[in-house]
Length: 102
Length: 183
Figure 1 (cartoon, each protein chain N blue to C red):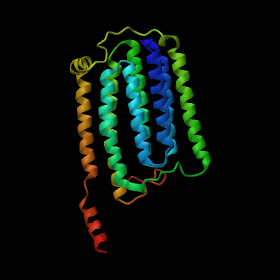
Figure 2: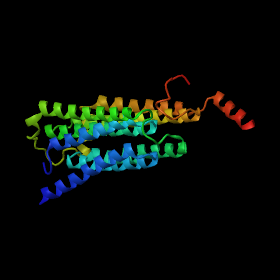
Figure 3: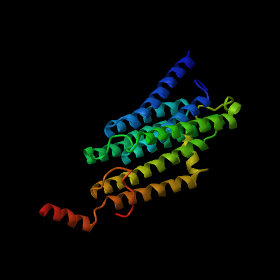
Figure 4: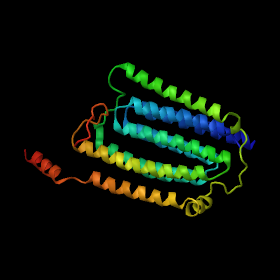
């Protein structure tokens, strides 16, 4: 294919995944944690697409679409939880949110 | 000539993608973080295009930059300045440990890919022009991957119902709000 070969895509994907991991571990705001999770899911998508290109099959792309749908669902539920937490007037801080009971 | 252009665009997209990814986790204002994530998703869509995943690139822009990020921005606007912007609390060794853990993960992934795939990554399959086009993906979704397609729709439905359930106020909350307003 034109341009860089699959190894370069995988390197970008791996770096992006560890950036997302660092975000999840470093930040306290559940909003930023969700954003970092999106980065991790997308880096996995990039790897899936690179492998689909490598093997010349579409299965990786189908998988990436499924991941996209799951990510959208996760955002809906996660943001719903964040709004519910904010309405209860609790601290939006993952270090302090330790119990699930409302 | 074409190859040089593709390399240039690829490098731009990759640098943009990694840079905006770093911006997402370092910026203190969650609004700017969300905007940086939009840039991240956009440059990822360019990378998808260059890996001949045309439909996925379009879906990425529509679903993520279009729908998901708008939702994020609405929630950030709703919360106002109530979400903590700063980095992790506690002593700084926690932050250091988090960065070391992420770096260790990166090294592990690179080593495993290098060991397992190594030389196999160089010889790519040749694909026809229609590879990754909407027609091709749609045909596969309605034939070989029909079950995945249906399960995806059910997952989305459950998420929508869950969002409504989480978003509705309970009666107790209404009364509490009323009492607070009276006091």
